[in-house]
Length: 311
Image (cartoon, rainbow, N blue to C red; front, side, top):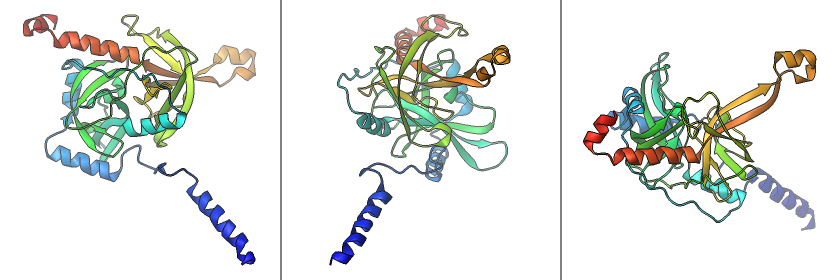
């Protein structure tokens, strides 16, 4: 019996090594960030049923949103573990983007980025640049995909701001897990992000709030220029993904990434300053989403005559 013991131990060790992850932890699959065949088929069924919003209509709504009152859930106060924040983000986050035909072939594609539900009945926030139709589409439709793979059509734009890189959508017919907003954060507070950078699905990172600042090239109010730097990791494909605090509230969403160098003159005087010196992660803060929704509520409350005069 003893001679079989080492083999049994090896087999048990191998089983642990093969599994590697705790029970219930998903194994990410290549290609899911850009859209699986199943998502394309589901979106196709919605298109054939006439339920999807075409790109031309989305462009029109970005210019003239259909304002409505949105009641946000209160921010959560109880802190949770990093692992629980990941689990929450995995269940609640959505992907927002385009189901489209390109100019090069007759196959349908998807281009999906991040987003997060603000209400159970389908108010979804993401980046303005995610929603803006792109020139590489000859036909396109805007969709929302939840964590279980359910595809929901976008039916309207409630509020948006290119300056703030924020867009709030209405996705009708779905049932979502709302993610509360929190704008009471400070530099040094924890920040977490679950996104799909460069097609790497389900990438979870931890960082902190670095600073709040006003973007100098934004033409608008001080609130519209407000941005936040955080040190969580992201890349193209992460846009619109929620950035979470220690309680799982959304404190902002991924907007841009930029590398900064010492510049040509600095490199001439000191070769060590040549190339990228730091990578900056810029987010649109939760306060910006709140401001847009507050303005949308005012707009929705206007009489038809007041609305006509305002336009």
